[in-house]
Image 1 (cartoon, rainbow, N blue to C red):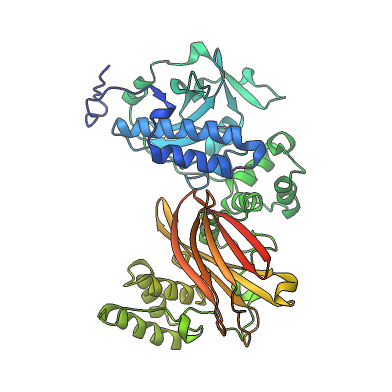
Image 2: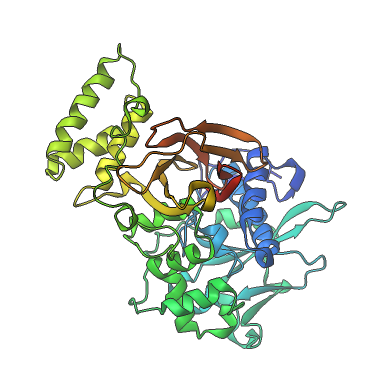
Length: 456
């Protein structure tokens, strides 16, 4: 079948792809799907997996047809994996209007189930629903773009108060989903959020801890809409459930959310004493960032950083630091600029998110407490810059010789290993990772071992 639409004359003449073999998905897509499934809480992995498969299939189908489709309501792509733990479905804004993808794994479909959120929260209400049948059986491993329906035609009398869902009968579905592409273009609708109201930290903790397993059945619609629609509340909930998902650290930084990682990971100034000069370039000389002596650009940047440090809160300093982060002559310069910008009186999301936690290796260190710093910077739409550092908490202390900092991949393979020497005040490492990629940090000394796991 070939589609040529008068409404979208730019569409290429390509075969419509309405039935997708899961095994035929691009390797990068399958990797992303498996990563976010594995990162989900155990009781949510099935729903997250179905939604991820359906989302990738529909997004790619739109791209094949030359149409831009972006997740906007109520979250964008970086938050989708956490959102799917709570609500089935995801929204894409397209030229034809807002489309909500509804996956189901039932073999014989006579009706489609719509969570009430998509119709009863005004800001979320779409123009169309796309039903996606996801069959993960070994013999039937495929994704079917089953059809679409007008949201305005979903009858109120189909509401099930026990399941809190509406129903779309098969007769209401237009099974030739390609016809959706020929519908008239619409102006994008602005996202209209409800007026913000205070959401109890105790409520967020009860959901994250599992005390409330199914919040959409327990909370009123108004409470639930406040929690998931307001970015600050939603991010606090997602980070309470996944405190070590670094992409959310960045998002929380954009909304100036500080106290969303509970007591484990805190702001640098909350743990590191003022007497400890923690900045890159102020550790022991042997650990100073190295630069190519032939690089005039890098030398000039180092001189610029020294000048900025003397007048950090000058507005011009902030602009200069942002430029060095986004267009650095080296990774060392990038991170020095980022940490300085993070310390600015008026910090900027460009500085990323910097968090620190106390690490106690017990008797092996004779009670000495260490500080583990983790920082994440935006890199591009699909990846992030990462930085890890270990220091003693006392300004006059040194790390014990032989303390190892190891970074391992999601499969457990060693990616990097650093070992402290006598009189080292820090060990640190810079790298980057793809969104959804998991990795671990292992600190080891004298038989004591601590492991921290993260998802980019």
